[in-house]
Length: 60
Image (cartoon, rainbow, N blue to C red; front, top):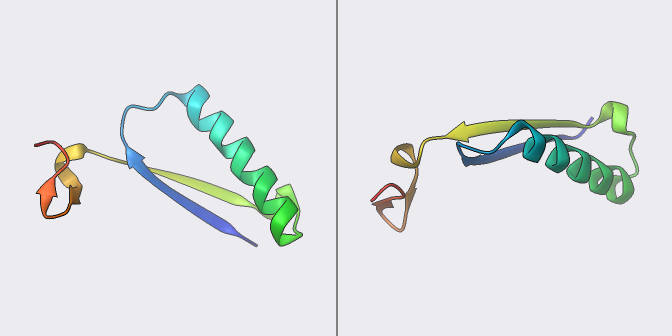
């Protein structure tokens, strides 16, 4: 049972997440030879102030 965790900055719409979930599921099903029913996609929204890149907060 593949589980894909997608961490991204908060602010994406439900429609964007729905489209991403469908696309990710399709790729996982095709490449890992599983079924959509066994594929899970979890979105974790993160504030830019809680994410750092190269030692700097993304909100800076």
